[in-house]
Structures are given as structure tokens and as C-alpha cells.
Image (tube, rainbow, N blue to C red; front, side, top):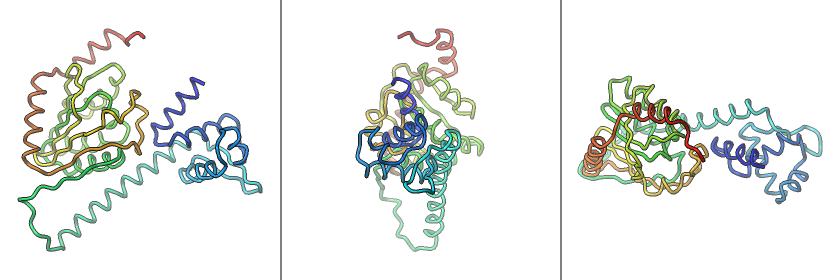
Length: 284
């Protein structure tokens, strides 16, 4: 059961719902089955199983038979995970394409200048946060600053934000980050260092998750820390969060100043990683 629980957790972290993960694992372990038997073994309603099977079929993780009654089989794990990854990648690419189209269309419109007004938006899911952060980082020209608790550092590694940050660096921009470097996230932090980010460790940092781009756009977490599981690799794109995004210059200046104060109190992440590797993993 412990192995099943861990496997299900990893599937959820890959973007599946808990019901999808349980049903897919059941098909993997026990072989093809009709919906009626699946409902009985999972102790749920047949209609619920049909909906979940439809979602898994759309994701490319299960395939129905052609005979009647229909029997559903799990697609081989590597192929299924690749299909899910491609689907998320396609969704993010589609959002980016629409953003660029809207940007071009805006040039053709005669919108009233809004320089003297600030706009505010609440981001309500991890998927939206990933798309917005990637988009902002992609358009950033000079600087991307962020501070995040260790629990949320996995977002950058799991959902492609690192690639957007890498493009900023390749254009000659600067990406600096602050987090509490702990043993479970060593690889995720090392990935940031490898792409050229300047990351620092601030012991015990449990403050808000915030970022500033080019000293004009900023985002601040309202409940990300409470929404993310202790097992950071279980983060789902559908996770509900609340993050404030704004182009208010006063807010950006305040957060940038806060960042610099924290930066002075921190130490290089590479130094912290070296210390942790010498100490070894924490004992239970």
C-alpha cells in the first residue's frame, strides 16, 4: 500500500487527479477491465469511472477495446507519461500563442493610455501561474528577482519556468533568486545554478513567494505556501492558489527593496549545497 501511495503521489504531481491516478494504477497492476469491474474494485460509482476513463483516454493514458462490452487497458507507463507531458506542453504553447496574438492585435487598436493607472489580477491556479510567469520571464529584458520558500521551488523545475529564465540570461539579463536550500531540493536548486541563475540560501526562509520583473511587474503569493504539499513533487497544475499580479510601480519598488535586504542576509546556494552534501541526508 505504501508503494501504491507513493506511485499515486507521483502521478498526481505529473498533473493527474487523484481519481485518475488510482484508476490508471489499477489498470497497470491488474490488467484490462470493463468499467463495471473497475467501479467495483475502486468502490465507486460506474458513472464516476466512465468520466475518469474518458479523461484518461483524452490524456492518452488508457485505450478502449473495439469489442462490446468495452474493456479499458492502461497504456505503457513511459508512453502514457510522454503523452501527458506533451498535452501540458501544448496547452502552455497555446496560451503563449494567444498572448502574442493579443499583443499584436492590441497594436491595431486605439486603446486609451493607462500609464497612470495600475492593473491588478489574481492568479488562481498553478497552471495559470506557470503560464504567466513563463510569459513574463520571456518578455523580461533586464532583471528577474524572486524569493520563494523551499516548498515551491519545485515549480520551476517541474513546469518549464527554468527554460523561460534561461532565455532571459541568454539575452544578457539577470535572474536572481532566494530560497531556503534544504536537502530535498538540492537537485532543483542545482538546476537553477546550471542555467546561470544567481541563487542564494536564506536559512529558514518561510516568507511570502514574490517576484519582480524589470522593476515594473510584480507578483506576490497570498496562499501558495499553504496550498503546496509537504512533498513538493506532488504539485499539480490544477492546484488552487491565490497570487496577486500587478504592474503597480510602487509595489514593484517595495518588493525589489525587500529582495535586496534579504539578499544581503543570504549566502551563495552553491556553498549551502556543499555543506548539505557533506552532512548527508537528514535522519528520520
